[in-house]
Structure formats: structure tokens, C-alpha cells
Image 1 (tube, rainbow, N blue to C red):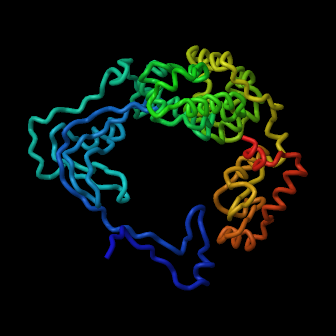
Image 2: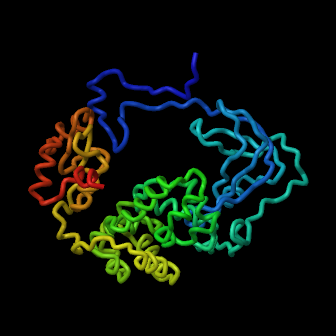
Length: 402
């Protein structure tokens, strides 16, 4: 015997499946039925506040350890203070716990037989628990935030991890444990400090011999010429993900062009609305952020300058492409990045608005849907031929060079 968390109910007849079709993510002829999650009672011992990369303070419940859904749980996120108020919980309360989706521990209510008349109220901190900077709550937001930015050690650690991640500066070997050591040893207190590390500083760290130190320094040096989109993502601007960073790099072409951007120019970029534009403007208005970028440039960061492009200049602007199946010469992430560079929107499903589908072996239902709708379908070799015609460098070759 083995545990299951539910079943999938499907229509048997293929004709009915075909008639119902698919929505954006799932077939309309299948439905998941989840069994009710197991719930148990335990005691709320304490609430601590964790600080994330953007300064968000998240209340985390410390619980009397309890076995639920196959694991022992002693912590559960409370998300924000609005959720704490909604639940009406106090320290010492007996609470009901379940694992949402049989994965994430979640407090759902105070236990009906709770007896805790002297329970202490859970209060939001006025100062950051890590750095002591004032805690603020912006109008219209539910999250509390530490105002200390990179002065806050917790934010610094998370910012460095994000900066070095694969979607950002892609500094191989600079993982979370090493970042924590660098900060704890006061070797790094800004992003730019990474580019001033010396071999003798690294070899004194845990599990860091001369060879590992040399490899890390080489990876840091190689990151100085990463594309502008990578740097803009790595800076950790709120609401700016990889796709938005790519749009910014395409529109402004250079780091200086981005630094000189206006809100009106930002709103011209696909998928950037008033909220994201405001976040970018606020980021650029802070002297600390501009000083951080200048320090990176002084340390030798020089993302290649590219020709700034407006929406109408992009070859595939207004088109929607889908990549499906297995590709041999590049992975789907590389293909997606190339299409976005050319201005295309890359969707996860096929619809009547799809322009073209790049299909490799094992394409499955997306290929069938494209053929049914009469949408252009090309294989990987044809896609590579088109890239050559469009003058786009082979992304798989670029990765091999790195």
C-alpha cells in the first residue's frame, strides 16, 4: 500500500475529449479531486519575523512539533500581519495545522477547545529584527518592510544570492553558504565588493582551497561582461523579472540609457505598466541604488552596449510563439530567450492567437492543437535556419563558449 493525495477524473471517450479541448494550462476533460487535507492540533510557541531580499518581513510561527501528512512540522508561515489578525491567534494558543497541498504547513484556525485566556497578542515589530532599521508599511500594501536595504545583513545576503544566480550574473560557485560566510566575515558589504575579493581572503573560508578560490575569482571576472538584461535582473529591482529586464535592455541598449530613462519611456515597453514603471523610477531615484551601480561600474562591470530598439523595430514584435518538445542543439529556455530578444511573446499553450510553434520530439498535445488550428509548425532545424537568416548568433554556441 502507499499513500495518495487524490485522484484525476477523466472523460473516457476520445471524441468528447476532443470536443472539450484545452484551456491555457489544463485539459477541460480532466479534473483533479483532492482528498481533504489531514488536520492536527498543536501549540503556537512563538512568532519570529524573517527578512527577505526586498526587505519584506514575514511572520513565521514556531510550533510544538507535530506529525502531519507524513512529516514532523515545527514551523509554518503566517504570511503577513493581516493574516495574523484574520486568524485571531495569540501566543500560546492551540491551533489547527494542515499541510496545504500536502506540502506547505499552514495554520487554518484557532482550535475550538483552545483555553488560553492570558495569551499574548502578536505585535508587528517597529524595527527590523536583523539590523534595527525602522519598519515601514507602504500605502496599499499588506507587507511590512525593513527600510535598511543593503545596510540590513539579511537583505544583503539575499541580494548577493540573487545577484549571483543563474538568471542574473551567473557566478558559478557563489552559492548561499559561501555568501553567508563572506558577509559574516565582513569581506563583502556591497555588491561591488565581490569584484574586489583577493585569493588570500577566500582561502581562509570553509571548504575554500586555492583551486576553488581561483575558480570563483575567474567566474566573478567573467561576469563583468554579462548582457545588460542579466545585470538589470540581478540588481533586484522590485517587480523586474527576467522578461522585464530583457525588455528594458532592448529598449535602452546600455546601462547609461537605463539610468537616464523616464517613466514615459518605461511605459512604452511591452508588459511594463504603471506599477512596474513606478518601481523602477523609485529605484533610480534613490542615491544608494545609483551609488551601488556606479560602484559596480568602477569595479569593471561593462555590459556590452547594444542598439536601442523601439517596439516597432523588433522582427517578431506582435507575434506569439510556442516552444514544445525536446530540442537537441539548445534547450527550451535558450530558444525562449532568443524569441523574446526578437520581440516575440512566448506562450505556454497553443491558441488561435499563436503565430508559430517550434516542435521537437515528444511535442504531444501542443503539436496536435497547432495542427488542428492550422498554425505554422517548424522543427528545430528550420528554427535554426531562420535564426541564421535573421542574423542571430547560435545560442547553443554562445553557451559553449562560456
